[in-house]
Length: 113
Image (cartoon, rainbow, N blue to C red; front, side, top):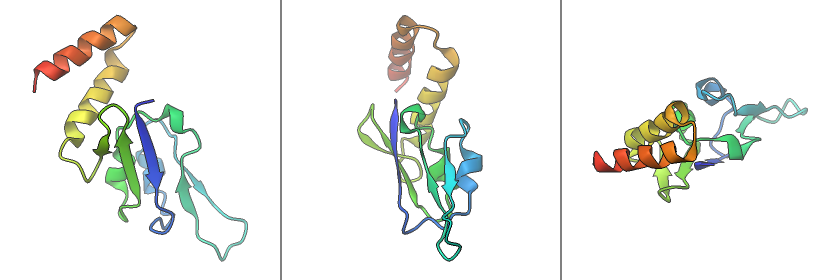
């Protein structure tokens, strides 16, 4: 929808902090049947992600990157625009009931810059 999440399996240690940080509960841990292998975070339903980047903020290993589809940039821990983007996404989720409201909200947000 708004964002694309990438999880670097080589960095993920399977701590599960991202799963608790996701407000929409979209992240899971993939626990292999072989107990010698390490668990890692997965996002089975990418299209439901709104790009709030709370998972990336919580990840102690910097294994999660969130890419904004709207702005074509990295959001989250590595971006100066994280707070602004997160505010826009939150406002869209809370305040939009129809397409016209979405465009009005985007206009108001862009005028604040």
